[in-house]
Image 1 (tube, rainbow, N blue to C red):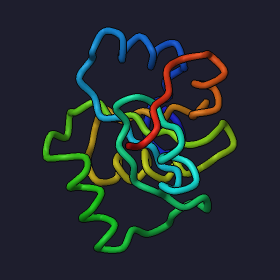
Image 2 (cartoon, rainbow, N blue to C red):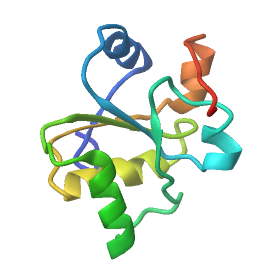
Image 3 (spheres, one colour):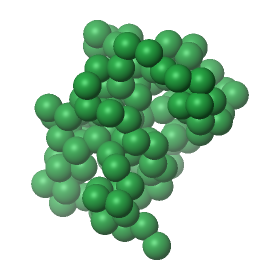
Image 4 (cartoon, one colour):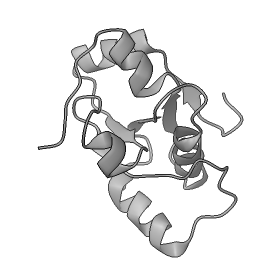
Length: 125
């Protein structure tokens, strides 16, 4: 467990889950225009989180996050951002755990490690 109460997944583990068609939600926490639109892990949805650690979550962001994650608190959810030192995915994963989701992972390598592993990348249409 990380300090946010979530687990961590490696590049190889995440690729294996995708290849096996493991049911999961992958959330890209980077800005839409400058990052997600240009490149993201196939099948990922986007919800931007800030870089500084979030000590609170306003009602609008909370409602949007709960809508995105859905009612199944046992659903496998993976958050990622740009690279290891990026903390956007930490914020997303931490708040999912705080909202009661139990199967939450952070992929710390982010899109940079995914791309360096030469795995497929999508762009928004």
